[in-house]
Length: 146
Image 1: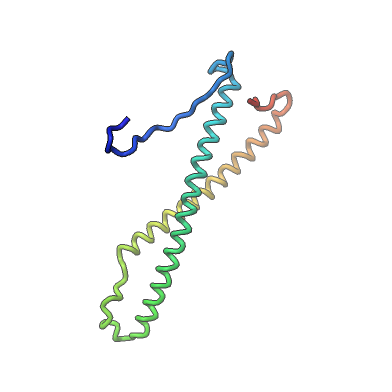
Image 2: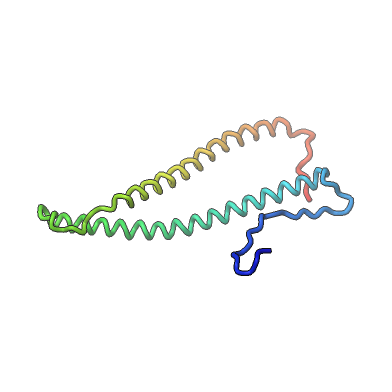
């Protein structure tokens, strides 16, 4: 444990696998269950990250809407000034902020397009696997249920 006054001690995540007596780690059912459990945990972590992302997107949407309205108001104000716009010193556009917004937009677009591509690729792989499974169904056992 850490000394008093120090921050919380970070612990690595771990999984406890309880095997019934008489079951070894090499047992196919135990291995199948362990792999299933790992996959369930990975999906839970993915869902947590997606919920967090959704919450951030909601806050981001409000931020974008506020800044969009502000930019539109500044544009209307500048249009009303006409050629006298040089007298308005506080209407400088935010250059660094624009670059950050564009980076965020690109990251979101890449994330969305990457997910769509992986779905298409996964669909192609699944249809190939389904065809192979249909031709090999005779005489095969189903998955081991634990």
